[in-house]
Amino acid sequence: MSKNHSSLPQWKTTSERQLVHTKIFDLDAVIRSEEGTHREGEFFVLKAQDWINVIAITSNNQLVLVEQYRHGTNEFELEIVGGMVDVGESPLVAALRELKEETGFVPTTESIIEQIGDVTPNPAFLNNHCFTFLVTNAERSSEQTFDEHENIHIRLEPLDSMEELVHSGAITHSLVIAAFYYYHQWKSKQHS
Image 1 (cartoon, helix red, strand yellow):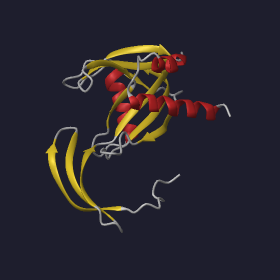
Image 2 (cartoon, one colour):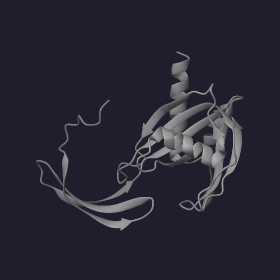
Image 3 (cartoon, one colour):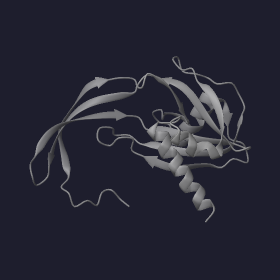
Image 4 (cartoon, one colour):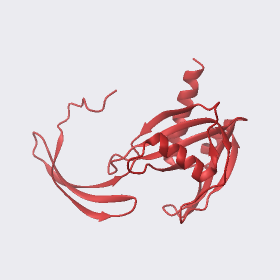
C-alpha cells in the first residue's frame, strides 16, 4: 500500500536551514505550509544516512547477537548487527560489511541473503530508512574489527528464543523487534 495516496493536504517546504551538523546526522529547521489551509510552522528534522539491521543465523540455527554499550540509554544493549549505510554504499553491501566488522561472520555458498524489511525509524522527525537483511548459514571467518569507540561481545542464542528475548526484556531495541517481525513474516511465507 502506497503512503502517497492520502486525501489530506500536502505540506510544502518554503525554507530550510541547518542548525547542527554531526558525524551521524544533521538537524535542520524546516518551514512548511499546508496546501489549501495555509497553516505554516517550523519543524525540526534529523537528516541521517539510512541504516541496516542483519538477522544472521548459523547453520545450526543459532542467532548471532551483539551486546554493546549504548550511549543513548546509558546501558548495555543486546541487539542484532546494525549500522549506517555509508555514502555511495548499497544497503546490502553495508549489511554484509557490518556483519563482518561487528562479528566476523560472513555468508557461505549455502546462505540465503535477502532484504526482508524496510522501516522508517521515526518519521515524526527522522528522514531515513532502516533495511533489514537476513543471512542464513553464516559462519565465523575472521576476528571483529571495531570502530574507534566500539567494543562488541558476540552472543549466540537459539533461533527459537527470539520471541522470549523480547518478552523477557533482554531485547528492547525497537528496530530489532521490527526486524524480528519481518523474519517471522518471511518464515511464514516459506512454509505456505
